[in-house]
Length: 211
Image (spheres, one colour):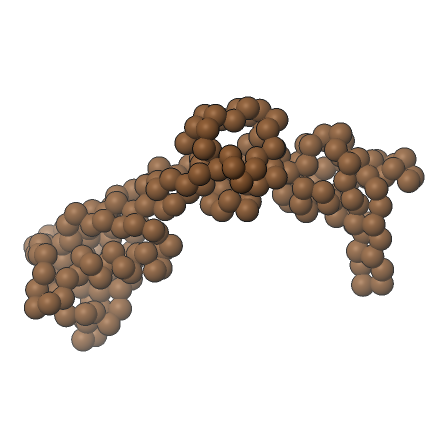
């Protein structure tokens, strides 16, 4: 019923600039600040009631693809609105084609402005989360790095096993028996005892073990 009332009553007033206040620019700045976008472009803004002054509050009700639905609070009154947007984030991408098994370095990464609706699930947002990782598959130039395709520790690699509890900290030499990403539980060989144990991948050289 609410959606029907919204569709019926909303006469949608389109505007660009009124009395020195431009809602379009305000929304663009708001989305950059609150959602971390690097660039935002709004093609049109439509509201149920004309907004000619800075609102007290903006609430984003829905942000999907290029569609934005929001409410603005002014003088204790709620104004409903919608807009068509294009929002972009700077993403680390492959500077060139990279082969499977390649350990990614700073020189292998460039930056590209990507529309947020086209950023794939599991995309790695920061360079530091990529550098030193090994590619599970080959990727082409300008490809966004995906977490599931990056290996932190490779099978057969020498690692440091760390055992920690409130009473002691122990470091041991180990060997990874399978590939693993950050946070994965993998099998490792304790070189000293020659026993296979499980541990959590912490970084490119370290596996945390608990008993």
